[in-house]
Length: 162
Image 1 (cartoon, rainbow, N blue to C red):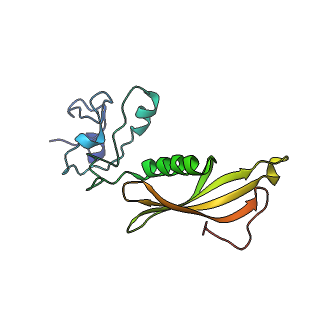
Image 2: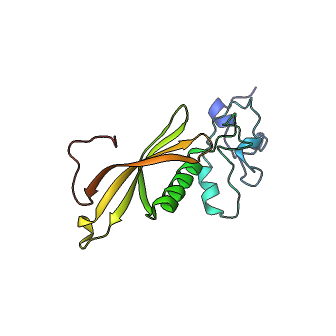
Image 3: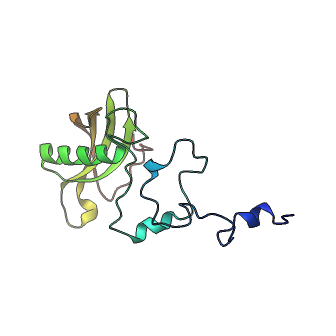
């Protein structure tokens, strides 16, 4: 008669338990190879193993061929990178941050912060927020400046980036 409790039977040092892919980090190549019927969560307790190995390719989460996306739309990080690069090319100003980001029916809408005029001290530099619209493929379709402000001043009348 087996008197082991359920928690003891699932311990990784149990000699009767077969070693699975969660017991060793060398057998896991990506999350996309996991069968769709796998009942385990998408994140394991071994997720820190990936950060120590910079040579290991990361599994794609969005984009072409990914399990999470049904069409050819780029993922959110790709859209952010494309929007910043395209706005910089059109305006000649480098995007400092993205303060608002949302998916729309037609594509994506972002609010990007840029420095328009550098001043000393830096808290007096003139900043601007640009509303940027992109199509579903991540191509910029339009932009406009929606506000201009000094970097060091709080914006009391606006909340949540809109």
